[in-house]
Amino acid sequence: MLRAFIGLGSNLSNKSGDSRQILRDAVSAMSRFAIGAVKVSSLYASSPMGPQDQPDYVNAAALLFTDLQPHQLLDQLQQLELNAGRIRLRRWGERTLDLDILIMDHNTPDNIQDDSSRTPSDQQSDMIKIHDERLILPHIGILDRTFVVQPLLELDAHLVIDGTSLADCTAASTTSGIRIIADLDWAD
Image (cartoon, rainbow, N blue to C red):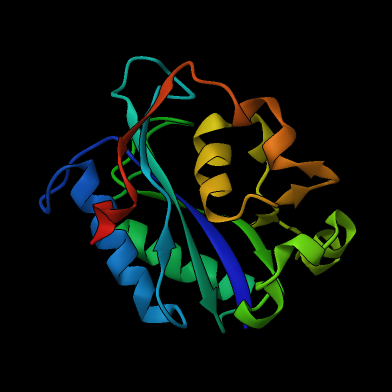
């Protein structure tokens, strides 16, 4: 069993509804390949990272446990994106649904019960690292993206990427261009 943190984003509507509904549907669909419940962060609104001539994004992070290997999980997430009508028009452009595997590791519910006893090097050794033409894990640029760091910290305040605690990076405390728009119950 693997632990996976998934980044969720949307700034376009589809036939199912607005960005909130699209993300709600994505969380529900992810439960099909999760072991146990999918846990979600608060829902955030954030300024677009790319071209500024697009609507603000609605973002969140999800935590799930799965038996899927990283590339299998990627395939499932990309299928959910296609089902939501995702079309890639331009780099960092508008999207109906964007699902990214941010981090995967070998932590299971049993060995993360007491995070206070786990050192940053323990967490680093559990982390899956991949760099190929389809997938980079941990996801590139995590530490620089407020809309990724803040939701992730809600799910695990002790995450460490490449020796840097997420809680200590600048994106953890930045308030410009991001705000919470719904509490943890938004996906229910």
